[in-house]
Image (cartoon, rainbow, N blue to C red; front, side):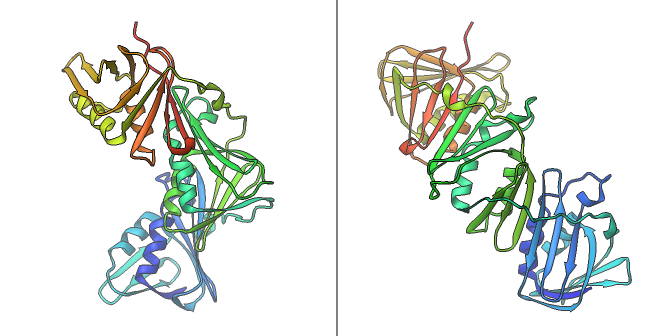
Length: 372
């Protein structure tokens, strides 16, 4: 096997192809990249716990000899990332060594046994196929995955529910403490889908396809296949029925808060500055709507107490209204909002409250902390 390629081109591939690989050294196929050199293309394939990935190059290289090798994925990526010369040549020496060489760099790598790597079948026979821009894909999934729980005892809650019907595409996620829904218009009025995609599969695909403009997405009953110009990923789906989280969202609210995104982030960050474990599930922050100001309080028994005030908001509803909740949950919700101002609806101190996005496309529900 021997080929020559622009260094920048193979850097793009090696950086992405290493994403699914893991440190499960008991499974060779989870730690290696299978490089396959043909007459007119080069493919790079790797596998992980959650998805398989294949990169295909059809230009910007010279092929001198066909062949197939299996090499340590993370080490290969580390080496390629260090080379600064314009071109790099990659070839085998005998049956067990790979040479990676450029004008000023040269590396020798011991090869793995390529027979122990079972190549993935990236063909999926299905009619459930649609095209989505990466920008829309990112918005749909990045906007809700924070509400799921990758370690939830219920496997269904480790995923994001994707539903397409009546010209609307909707994603939703919940961890039983909060729930988030995001809806966008969809150009195919006839396509109907209801799938649960593991959050870890989504996270890896968000990184793999971040440079892509358009994605082709295809589903079978238990697989999701995503393709772009150079990459194909194949991941498992979660089987089951996702809870209808839309039913738990209140329809009406007694109280509404309109405030800038930055102002509420300042309140949360300024009040919890004394907290050393900001990701704890037991943190509690209190919002008190008193006269013409919001008072935000946080107490850490072993450290101290903090309080901030602001008058930069609009509030319609009861005075002397208060609510307590985990500040991390609110922070994660509003940082995923594509808006400078936000609206929050409240009913009472013991009921869930909802953060709204612009055009009602986004809404995130959070359960309050019930004070004893």
